[in-house]
Image (cartoon, rainbow, N blue to C red; front, side, top):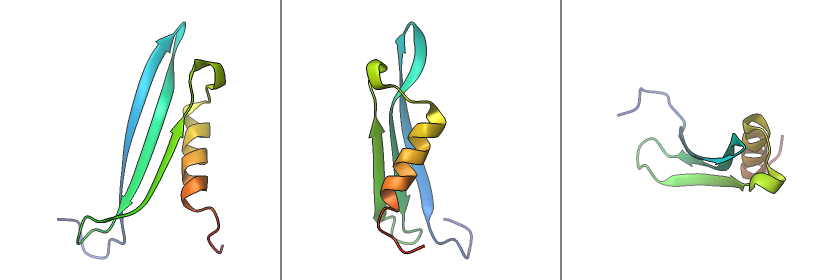
Length: 72
């Protein structure tokens, strides 16, 4: 049970691969309603070794996609 006053629960799954060096292959972030566990938003980033991005860039991409089109 989440603490009172929580608006959402954020979970993530990351997948790493090896190609000369370790790199993050895929990142999935899910924002869920704390009461019903219903997914409110999901974002994903997938980059093979040829298009790899840093973990920070992948996080920025996922969060940017989740909030794309939202009023600021």
